[in-house]
Image (cartoon, rainbow, N blue to C red; front, side, top):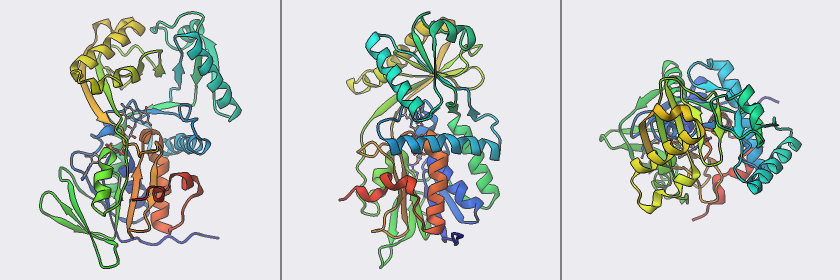
Length: 373
Ligand SMILES: Cc1cc2nc3c(=O)[nH]c(=O)nc-3n(C[C@H](O)[C@H](O)[C@H](O)COP(=O)(O)OP(=O)(O)OC[C@H]3O[C@@H](n4cnc5c(N)ncnc54)[C@H](O)[C@@H]3O)c2cc1C
């Protein structure tokens, strides 16, 4: 039986990070009328301040969440085939090793669980990983290194630019550097008008709330309660003459990945934990840089070029909020942590829901209705 696709009317996508972009791109290529609205520039929100690791190995907390992330990895591969991989898609795998015996045992247990779930995983020694994969990285000879060959990293801002460009070429409109300050509803409670901070307004039939860390505020504009956690993280970009690492990796205290020509990205949960102590972000970036130099001595002559603290867009229970909110006709949410991994799959599933009204079973555990006022 074929699912009927109807034109949904005019859709305002609020927030042009990876999630809003993926929804709008999928809608617009299926003939829907899309307006992208962003308070800033496309892809310059959290999407540009992410470690950007495409994975499901860190998502074993719930099987349905793991499965959604596996589908996210597959959707990235399909997207790279569809639009071409240039300058945004880096399917170079992932390395992870731990510093102390307890953490090593836990890492190997997770690897075993993942292998049982048919996830691509291999284990080698530090010496082998250095010889075959990362000669510039100081991994001790005998530590177990878990290799996830199917994982990747993504240049989020460039992916957003590519998809928005294609959607605009297909007829999508955009309003950038102007925030949504109000969403007006009609007598039936359905969305009607989006008011922008530049004084203009848009008549719409549907809004997609993809406002990342500001999604709770945008939900409030339709009197919807979307509780979110506060969980800030800091990312630093390091400029170097030669990028000494070939893939994203988790060393014991620091995460490191390439970021294209002449640049490396650094992140550490240990440093994130210091953000709320009031420490100067420039000092936190120096800490990241010091940690990275211990693992990759070749970074000794590199310099910090940019650093930013960003809030993760995490609904209160830690899981995505994706789909229609039946109490507000025409209002949909696309709000999630791990949005780099999940962007292409959430974009595809939510666009299909908007176009056909059909809810995909993969989103059952992540429906917005689970949050009540
Ligand atoms: C330190 C850190 C590390 C991370 N590491 C990973 C990782 O390794 N892998 C992974 O998959 N995920 C990771 N994430 C999460 C991932 O980056 C996010 O889930 C994803 O980027 C969210 O994308 P988004 O489109 O929802 O948000 P954003 O990219 O923030 O986009 C939201 C947009 O909404 C706009 N906006 C906000 N309010 C309004 C308004 N009122 N009107 C108009 N526009 C508005 C903003 O300007 C912004 O451009 C990480 C996040 C952090 C902070």
